[in-house]
Image (cartoon, rainbow, N blue to C red; front, side, top):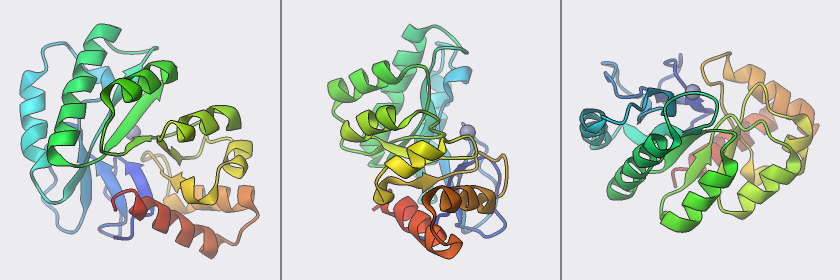
Length: 207
Ligand SMILES: [Zn+2]
């Protein structure tokens, strides 16, 4: 596995080099790519059983390797109670299929930490597009979360996080080379070395 981009919405030029979020489908008719399937917190309505049924069937495919993005958003979407119920359903799918979760978390870090302590997942939880500071990153890593960094990540946070915890994503907003370039500048590391580090860390997420 050679995943450079751990979260995008766009099929990469090189099959297998990105984890492509397809929401509740449909699954593109292509080979060699990796996908995540889930219900975004913005899409939660409270009557989502049909969506969970579809996600469940997508997750049984070998090329759908993560649940998500799912999570909590304090600024957009439905009530927090409905977001919580949808989150728990997707946590259950992650556990029953033994695959990790990709999380969209906006101003809800306390809540997701509480849920992690309460639900005690056996699968990894990755907070994508992390834009917080070094202190918050340290707290989340200490609670066992994984973090991925994109274009808007803070350089001081990238420098403060242990190298083994640095993952990268585009969220479909640019080429992954731009993000790797940003991370390599932040770390003062060669581009090739940074690219190898990112690939190895991204792939370890699925180990
Ligand atoms: Zn996204």
